[in-house]
Length: 175
Image (cartoon, rainbow, N blue to C red; front, side, top):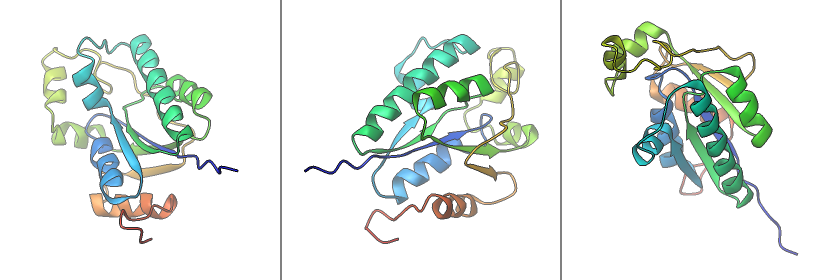
Protein backbone atom coordinates (compact mmCIF):
# COMPACT_ATOMS: atom_id res chain seq x y z
CA UNK A 1 0.00 0.00 0.00
CA UNK A 2 1.38 3.37 -1.02
CA UNK A 3 1.29 6.04 1.69
CA UNK A 4 0.51 9.48 0.35
CA UNK A 5 2.08 12.42 2.15
CA UNK A 6 0.17 15.67 1.78
CA UNK A 7 1.98 18.99 1.57
CA UNK A 8 0.98 22.22 3.28
CA UNK A 9 0.56 25.80 2.13
CA UNK A 10 1.86 28.75 4.10
CA UNK A 11 0.02 31.76 2.63
CA UNK A 12 1.78 35.06 3.38
CA UNK A 13 -0.45 38.10 3.03
CA UNK A 14 -0.35 41.80 3.89
CA UNK A 15 0.14 45.24 2.40
CA UNK A 16 2.62 45.76 -0.43
CA UNK A 17 6.17 45.93 1.04
CA UNK A 18 5.15 44.19 4.29
CA UNK A 19 7.68 41.39 3.69
CA UNK A 20 5.63 38.67 1.96
CA UNK A 21 8.11 37.79 -0.78
CA UNK A 22 11.10 38.12 1.54
CA UNK A 23 9.75 35.68 4.12
CA UNK A 24 8.21 33.25 1.61
CA UNK A 25 11.54 33.06 -0.24
CA UNK A 26 13.31 32.47 3.07
CA UNK A 27 10.99 29.52 3.77
CA UNK A 28 11.72 28.08 0.32
CA UNK A 29 15.48 28.58 0.63
CA UNK A 30 15.88 27.33 4.19
CA UNK A 31 13.20 24.67 4.61
CA UNK A 32 12.74 21.23 3.12
CA UNK A 33 10.38 20.66 0.22
CA UNK A 34 8.83 24.10 -0.43
CA UNK A 35 8.12 25.80 -3.73
CA UNK A 36 7.28 29.49 -4.16
CA UNK A 37 4.17 31.01 -5.68
CA UNK A 38 4.73 34.74 -5.54
CA UNK A 39 2.35 37.44 -6.74
CA UNK A 40 5.15 39.49 -8.26
CA UNK A 41 6.39 36.55 -10.34
CA UNK A 42 2.88 35.55 -11.43
CA UNK A 43 2.17 39.12 -12.60
CA UNK A 44 5.33 39.04 -14.73
CA UNK A 45 3.95 35.98 -16.52
CA UNK A 46 0.31 37.14 -16.73
CA UNK A 47 1.05 40.55 -18.22
CA UNK A 48 -2.54 41.81 -18.57
CA UNK A 49 -3.58 41.12 -14.99
CA UNK A 50 -6.25 43.57 -13.81
CA UNK A 51 -5.94 44.64 -10.15
CA UNK A 52 -9.60 45.36 -9.33
CA UNK A 53 -11.22 43.24 -6.62
CA UNK A 54 -13.12 40.89 -8.97
CA UNK A 55 -9.96 40.13 -10.93
CA UNK A 56 -8.06 39.61 -7.68
CA UNK A 57 -10.66 37.13 -6.43
CA UNK A 58 -10.42 35.12 -9.64
CA UNK A 59 -6.61 35.25 -9.60
CA UNK A 60 -6.40 34.20 -5.93
CA UNK A 61 -8.86 31.36 -6.60
CA UNK A 62 -6.56 30.06 -9.35
CA UNK A 63 -3.56 30.32 -7.05
CA UNK A 64 -5.37 28.47 -4.23
CA UNK A 65 -6.27 25.71 -6.70
CA UNK A 66 -2.61 25.43 -7.76
CA UNK A 67 -1.57 25.21 -4.11
CA UNK A 68 -4.15 22.48 -3.46
CA UNK A 69 -2.93 20.45 -6.42
CA UNK A 70 0.69 20.76 -5.33
CA UNK A 71 -0.22 19.84 -1.73
CA UNK A 72 -2.06 16.73 -2.99
CA UNK A 73 1.21 15.69 -4.66
CA UNK A 74 3.10 16.11 -1.39
CA UNK A 75 4.61 19.48 -2.29
CA UNK A 76 4.72 22.28 0.28
CA UNK A 77 3.99 25.79 -0.98
CA UNK A 78 5.04 29.20 0.31
CA UNK A 79 2.50 31.53 -1.32
CA UNK A 80 2.94 35.32 -1.22
CA UNK A 81 -0.08 37.38 -2.28
CA UNK A 82 -1.51 40.63 -0.89
CA UNK A 83 -4.95 38.96 -0.44
CA UNK A 84 -6.62 42.18 0.73
CA UNK A 85 -10.21 41.24 1.56
CA UNK A 86 -11.80 38.83 4.03
CA UNK A 87 -13.95 37.50 1.17
CA UNK A 88 -10.75 36.63 -0.74
CA UNK A 89 -9.38 34.73 2.24
CA UNK A 90 -12.74 32.96 2.73
CA UNK A 91 -12.70 31.85 -0.92
CA UNK A 92 -9.16 30.53 -0.54
CA UNK A 93 -10.31 28.52 2.50
CA UNK A 94 -13.14 27.01 0.42
CA UNK A 95 -10.63 25.79 -2.15
CA UNK A 96 -7.76 25.03 0.23
CA UNK A 97 -9.21 24.21 3.68
CA UNK A 98 -5.82 23.41 5.27
CA UNK A 99 -4.13 26.68 4.28
CA UNK A 100 -2.04 28.36 7.00
CA UNK A 101 -2.57 32.12 6.67
CA UNK A 102 0.36 34.24 7.90
CA UNK A 103 -0.52 37.92 8.21
CA UNK A 104 2.50 40.16 7.86
CA UNK A 105 1.24 43.19 9.70
CA UNK A 106 3.11 46.39 8.97
CA UNK A 107 2.17 50.05 9.23
CA UNK A 108 1.29 51.86 6.05
CA UNK A 109 4.06 54.39 6.76
CA UNK A 110 6.69 51.64 6.97
CA UNK A 111 5.47 50.01 3.75
CA UNK A 112 5.59 53.36 1.93
CA UNK A 113 9.10 54.02 3.28
CA UNK A 114 10.36 50.56 2.22
CA UNK A 115 8.77 50.60 -1.27
CA UNK A 116 11.33 48.18 -2.82
CA UNK A 117 9.45 47.97 -6.14
CA UNK A 118 8.37 51.61 -6.36
CA UNK A 119 4.68 50.66 -6.14
CA UNK A 120 3.78 53.24 -3.49
CA UNK A 121 5.48 55.94 -5.53
CA UNK A 122 3.46 54.90 -8.61
CA UNK A 123 0.25 54.93 -6.55
CA UNK A 124 1.02 58.42 -5.21
CA UNK A 125 1.42 59.68 -8.79
CA UNK A 126 -1.91 58.11 -9.83
CA UNK A 127 -0.40 55.33 -11.95
CA UNK A 128 -1.62 52.47 -9.71
CA UNK A 129 -5.18 53.31 -8.62
CA UNK A 130 -5.88 49.82 -7.21
CA UNK A 131 -2.76 49.42 -5.07
CA UNK A 132 -3.90 47.90 -1.79
CA UNK A 133 -3.65 50.46 0.99
CA UNK A 134 -3.42 53.40 -1.42
CA UNK A 135 -6.57 53.28 -3.59
CA UNK A 136 -7.38 49.59 -3.21
CA UNK A 137 -9.28 48.21 -0.24
CA UNK A 138 -7.66 46.39 2.68
CA UNK A 139 -9.45 44.50 5.45
CA UNK A 140 -7.57 43.27 8.48
CA UNK A 141 -8.13 39.58 9.15
CA UNK A 142 -10.23 38.31 12.02
CA UNK A 143 -8.36 35.01 12.13
CA UNK A 144 -5.05 33.65 10.88
CA UNK A 145 -2.59 30.92 11.86
CA UNK A 146 0.12 33.47 12.67
CA UNK A 147 0.48 37.25 12.75
CA UNK A 148 3.92 38.82 12.54
CA UNK A 149 4.49 42.54 13.09
CA UNK A 150 7.18 42.91 10.43
CA UNK A 151 7.99 46.52 11.22
CA UNK A 152 8.85 45.57 14.81
CA UNK A 153 11.36 42.78 14.19
CA UNK A 154 14.12 41.66 11.87
CA UNK A 155 13.67 39.20 9.01
CA UNK A 156 15.63 36.65 11.08
CA UNK A 157 13.26 37.07 14.03
CA UNK A 158 10.20 36.80 11.80
CA UNK A 159 11.55 33.68 10.09
CA UNK A 160 12.29 32.14 13.49
CA UNK A 161 8.63 32.62 14.50
CA UNK A 162 7.47 30.93 11.28
CA UNK A 163 9.96 28.11 11.64
CA UNK A 164 8.91 27.45 15.24
CA UNK A 165 5.15 27.72 14.62
CA UNK A 166 5.11 25.40 11.60
CA UNK A 167 7.97 23.07 12.61
CA UNK A 168 9.97 23.76 9.45
CA UNK A 169 13.11 21.69 8.98
CA UNK A 170 16.29 22.68 7.18
CA UNK A 171 16.93 21.52 3.62
CA UNK A 172 19.77 19.26 4.78
CA UNK A 173 17.35 17.22 6.91
CA UNK A 174 18.20 18.82 10.26
CA UNK A 175 15.40 20.20 12.44
